Amino acid sequence: MVVLPTPTPTPVVVELPEEAAPTDGFAYLAARVSELASSIVDAFWKFVALFTANGTGTPWSAGLSIFAQPVTTVNGAATVPVDVLRLARQASFGPTPQLVSRIAELGVPGWIDEQFRVRGSTYADLVKWVPNDYCSADRTIPNCWQNNFTRVPVAARFYADAALAPDQLRQRVAFALSQILVVSGNTVNSTAGIAAYQQLLLDGAFGNYRDLLGKVTMHGSMGLYLSMADSARSAPSENYAREMLQLFTMGPMQLNADGTPMLAGNGALVPNYGPDDIKGLSRALTGWTYARSGGRTNWTGNDYSLPMVVRSGNWAYDTQAKAFLGATVPAGAAPAESVRIALDTAFNHPSTPPRVAKLLIQHLVKANPSPGYVTRIGAVFADNGKGVRGDLKAVVRAILLDPEARGDEPRGGGFGKVK
Image (tube, rainbow, N blue to C red; front, side, top):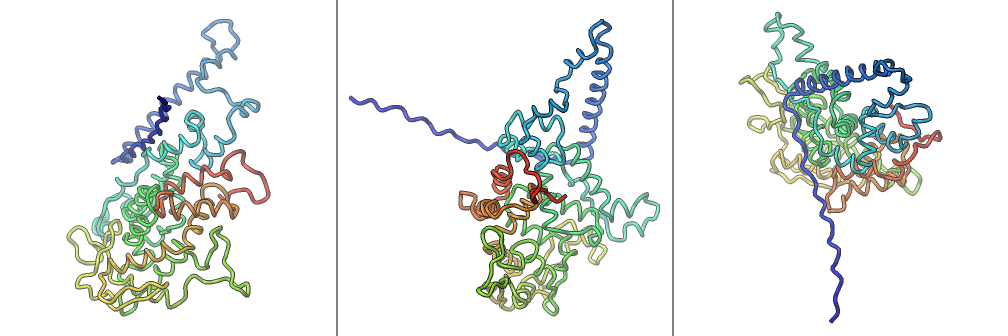
């Protein structure tokens, strides 16, 4: 009788659920500040202990043993793996002793996986709609304009979260996405609108790029910034159509898989789209306007923190057939279906993976990634290994674990990162 060896069971990888984001960002940060203050006080007394040595004749240097963290010196700095420090610079808003210790404890892959679950930063409590005539209706409200119609409260929260909240990687990726999927506080004069948009990027940082693109497209702040809101069939705005292709997805020129420009037989660059594509796409994006809050029906009720809605009566939407980039929207298709076809077409374009991959690498790791680096990350964007396109969690993991991102940071020769 032949006894077969017992097969080694395949390890089961359990992906832990993501934490819930705080509902009150101010209270959360206040607690973090309290913790920081306690640690500062504790450090002060440890510092004093260095010079007292418990009242004995022991040399003061013996007091160093009371520190949980080793003192960093010129020689001692070498004991921190350079790869740990490099990851802290790439994936956070700056190394701290606690962060470096945590990365060293979990290892690079383990820390990245932990960061995918951690939450802390939030703008949700800043999303408080007020009518557009709020300050003029009551001029006694202190700091009314600054607190309700500027980006100041959102910027203050951004810096506080960057310094104190533990979800550093999520914040770094959301910040990178904000440099790609751009809106501006110079145009969007709504604190609630800007806060809601930044929250959208935080929530979508490790989601799917197509889902995020859809939410960004329909967001009231984007509708205001790039003129998709109130774009009508009589004179469709081409602004969002052009920027969505040029900035958010494929870019103006066809790309090879490694991110280099594709060239025609005569050596000329090959455009991804032309004027007719922009015109057809802009017609597909007509018919939307701002959601209104507070029971108001005029401009004072515009709510830039909510997704846009179809205009009443659908009179502004172009119901005729539209063609762009080889795709067709059939006549009579609903406005939402037109938007879906438009975004799917751009998202699935072959130039989108290398372009988005290169942009994210540049924001997280280095300004001049090699063609091979872009190829590897673009391939993950195109397929995460499970047949899913646009999986940002897989893309971010691949960017940070790539051989070009790990090890000691190269010096000179274009290896730096633009700040």
